[in-house]
Image 1: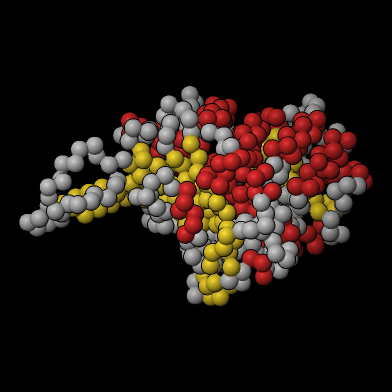
Image 2: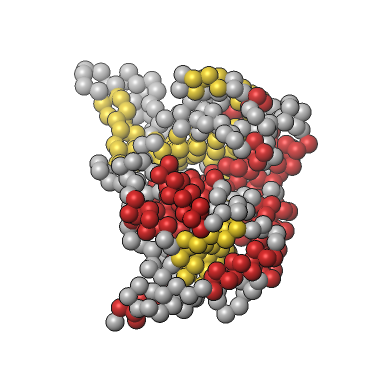
Length: 506
């Protein structure tokens, strides 16, 4: 019977998905296009409805117009369908109110109590849980959670889900405090800490590359690997986020979360299963094994810089201190390079170099693994004076491929080699790219926490960078600079352990 099938499909899944901050930039740029894609792919339950909650005093019709205009602006003309957009818009209700006002939560509760019959059944769904997505400033997290608790939406018969965006605190102490406050109202299993990097298909492909290919595992250790470089380079500056970024910096904004997530995926041991706890257990083991950085060693283990005026793609761009909203003489870093050692059986002695920055020469994300030189100098009496090392490059953007660099002899009478590239593209011609938020939103709806971050993972990530944060906080009178449109300051090379190590920019 159709009604029975619909109720079974809805069982265990949310009947409502509430978006706080629905008129903000995150919702418009990421959430609505992702929900549109899921609606188009028919991955949303017929019983699922959405509530947009924001401060703007709009009527439901005004909200509907805003949503449709937003989707048209963000989606390319050849991918936008008015039929799909209207279908998604029909799932939405709108509630306006201040996040600190208890009356707003009364209005929300009344909206959530309104019955909406399942298609073909005429019966209202039994609501197992509700998703509350906090697309708002971190400063408002606790206010919203407190009001949700007071309105009866935290612990109880139904296991409602709370989704929060990074940053998860500003340092180790604030992260712990935020977690304690959240746990006053919600259990850990109800909290979905989202890092959109984990939703990227190319990042998920790291697990496939690592654990589905038997030829990789025997050489994935300190016996064969010289060092690892992880680079996330961005061409854009701080856009209109000076109020947030100038108080945060790249170390908190990128390295503490995105970059360390890439490191754990690269270095983790094979989990017993792909269940959330098994995956997160192995990631935490990596973070716990990272060698602590003594205060006196920060200078040799981490480097920061700030972009000055330059050119990106041939266009002049201002320096960081000339960006609107940036404090005069700010020493907030827009570039960070750091070196970490993982003191376990697999990685003891192998340096991991992490680099990320804004206003760089190109937009590029990659993990580059350099292998050790062959132990025997077999070609020392030939024309080969130097053999380039082997590399495996896992390109996350823009090429989305795995590339292996090996040696082959050049044609001719001399024993001369050249580097040959073996390339395995992740995406075949014509295959559609999947946005990270499509995966993550669907996982939230289905209750799958595999691609989300457990608190002990957050805590250990902060422990890794906390010595750097504390040291820089006491030495903020000077910061290195680099020209916008470059690959960062040359001085960052001081982190390398040997003279033959250098940054890869491709």
